[in-house]
Image 1 (cartoon, rainbow, N blue to C red):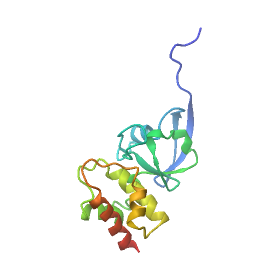
Image 2 (cartoon, rainbow, N blue to C red; image 1 turned 135 degrees about the vertical axis):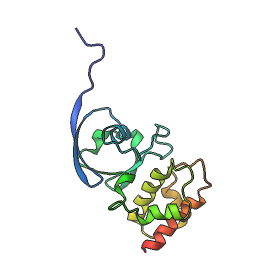
Image 3 (cartoon, rainbow, N blue to C red; image 1 turned 90 degrees about the vertical axis):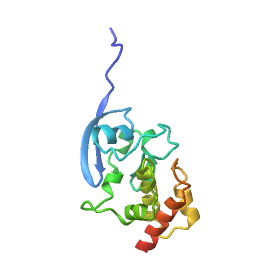
Image 4 (cartoon, rainbow, N blue to C red; image 1 turned 60 degrees about the vertical axis):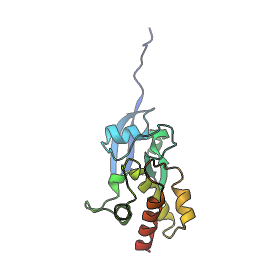
Length: 163
């Protein structure tokens, strides 16, 4: 007799999360966003569209910005995952986070973690991006509150401050 609702197969996921090694048993089909929010309790990662279209769930996987809502957690085996919670050092915000605060790059704040993570990925690759490069890097992140100008200015200010 076959079970009608078989338990999902689980495996041990080993990864580095915000600079710390971590191991958790996760089902094969668990999305990275759900792993981060429900297992790791990192709620700075937001769930927006559930389809990789809004960018609210953007995290860094090996330094690259990826939408965690369409990435399987098991695909991060032996990789480094960074969330907004992992950016601050000793509780102090990074230059990019301060710039978003000072330049008013945040309104309701829902998109901000994803925006910052996408911008962080860009600034690590290119510390002095042009406005067009910033716009391209953030093109997968949607904001309902702003006209994006303050967000662009925030990234530009962070780039100026660190160059």
